[in-house]
Image (cartoon, rainbow over all chains, first blue to last red; front, side, top):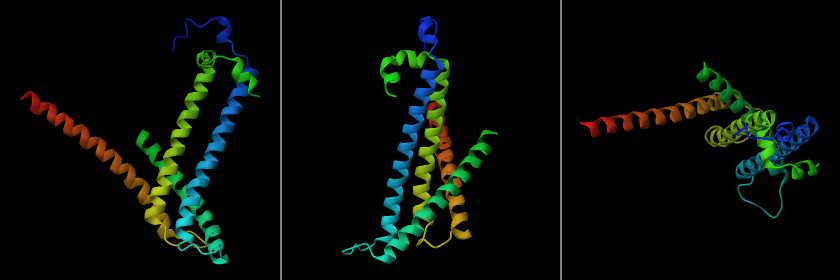
Length: 92
Length: 94
């Protein structure tokens, strides 16, 4: 990146513009993460709970899906913690 | 809200030091998130039985092992490739 050639006006992006763009980026990232989570969760829990799809989603299947969603989040939390503590160990 | 983005050139964005810092930090966070998501799916497949009303300690330790062995495997593969390419370079020299 060539900072030297940038004109004074481009170097001084005002803080309002900056905050605005950062906000948009953060929002889009958050939306993407939720979509990703939803996709994985649906995939994993459908496989576990709806093994032979019937004419409707039965109450046992719904119960299973509800539990599966909670366990998937637990699983993600354990993985996040394990991975970040391992990263910290590797860095030091 | 989008007006701010369209009015500004990409150049202006990337030349702003604080914006650059922000983009780098967000990219790093995103990389971590993608890895966690992939690991969650892999370890879910190898550790999860039928979903129960609570996560038991057996599953939890399986998940811990899964994450750590995955990183071990990744490190091992990198080290072995590194060593092999080192060896082949030496044998080429001889």
